[in-house]
Image (cartoon, rainbow, N blue to C red; front, side, top):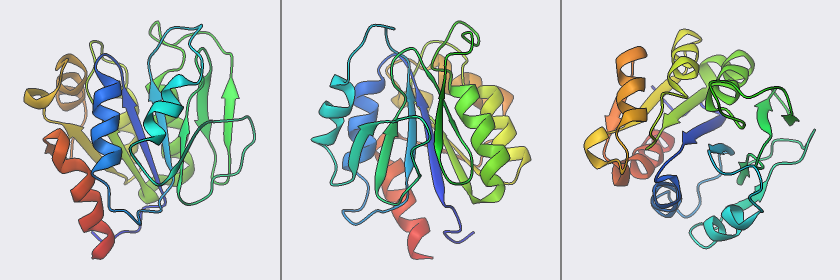
Length: 189
């Protein structure tokens, strides 16, 4: 399988703050693959999420800016009330209508990343109470990417990971605290 992957996309909702803290804190200290994150939150939220997550990793965590280049060692957080998309070199923000009641939408991020990165992409669905991300994870699998879902038994809200498992052909279902170490193992192959 090897670590051919050049980007990791992560989607989460209810319970996502704790899940993201665990994921980032369990990555190897020198992990350098860029990560793009959609966390559902209120439209009027500020950048507190990025500042809180920064405490759990040496990677640079920030809210994404439109047309910002994708560089190693960065975590790009979707700003509140914006869709986050990626092409093969940069991130983009959009105010298109919500998708399945969500903006930012996990599916929008995953589908854009799948089309741009194909087999060089890892998609991860974490805890949440709706099914956003299941369609996007299917697209990642169809394009040859690696798909990972948090074990619903370890999720604060199991509906989102269970929905992804039901819809997508998932490569790995892992307990939350095993996802970061698994990514580290992939890098060493």
